[in-house]
Length: 468
Ligand SMILES: Cc1cc2nc3c(=O)[nH]c(=O)nc-3n(C[C@H](O)[C@H](O)[C@H](O)COP(=O)(O)OP(=O)(O)OC[C@H]3O[C@@H](n4cnc5c(N)ncnc54)[C@H](O)[C@@H]3O)c2cc1C
Image (cartoon, rainbow, N blue to C red; front, side, top):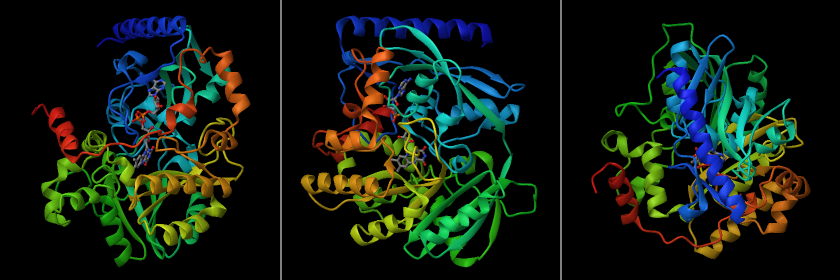
């Protein structure tokens, strides 16, 4: 479609959002966003009458290869975005690990990945936002224009305005990533190695701790050596990435391979890192190479999320990403090991955010590591809440912050010990969000017990496949 037509259609879509917000503002009706599927683990049961519908904002208006940016509507998922930029030899500098994460959700939800050690979370590569405010007015926010709104919007979970367009920075996209695996024996060693290798400015760094004393740091660069062994992770016959990494680290002290770019970027998609393994347990299916092959299409994150949302199972799992000062990571990993025994853990270094004050990596520490703590929880609902609060307190006491896409159970006073309440109230007032957008605390906290149903989970998958 021609660029002019796309821009014209975009204007019409923005007008539709404006009309909705103006009506909500007049009616003093606080609303949530509706954008279709979500990668949050919270179940959305919002009354559709009380949502602003941004689901049609799914276009890429322009890829500008000279100035290296893309103009993208917020409801474009990351796999569609890179398919549009790769033909220009470009990609966003931060591409979250799950292909279905949308640009708007990522900017609002603190999405990060293995290039974040250099770039920070995805919002840090957003150069400009077009925003419909709570009263229906449209503004453009950037570092120069409404900088307070620009920095406040990141990780505000749709509580300060409705994003309608994002200008995102692009960088060179390598065709293949050369991935080097360095085995480590502790989380402290992993963070030391990650700090050391960061000095060479590779494209990507992350690590997995398979157990307290077994882990691997993975360093990605543009692949120049085409003789390296080729590895892929997107096809049914490929091994899940984390199992491959564990196997490599157990056999080699320094191994390198070559991975096609998209297979690298979405390497954790099949199996949702390792959370898909719980599906096998739930249905008493043996977990082996053969069954991973057979159930491959069920194990992609989009399908797993559909199941999770339909089945309302997320209160049976601890699914949290926790940003910690680098110095506290070993203590936190020891705590997790003694308290929950959850493994593997994902370690992803992040550049500290100095401006976006709601961001999970807006910490005092100079270097931050995100710990992905995802595993089964054994206990009743009360124990689940107590445990979540315990983790929230622990992270706060170690000088860290949660990524708020997950379940939050903070008492309100404790939540505002982590985030600057006065500043939040002031910016909500200034940009007219008070009357028509739900506030961040109400949006991210879970206030009820979900009723789990595996059958409803299956029905959600079948419905989506058009089989019901
Ligand atoms: C096991 C697991 C592993 C994960 N690993 C990673 C990882 O490696 N890297 C990573 O980046 N993330 C990871 N995530 C989390 C994921 O990034 C977040 O859930 C992210 O927010 C998802 O984006 P979404 O598009 O689904 O948006 P949602 O989660 O649906 O939305 C996020 C917020 O954005 C708001 N919003 C959406 N659209 C708009 C708009 N147009 N205007 C204003 N507000 C809007 C929504 O209201 C919501 O509050 C992981 C999650 C799990 C469960």
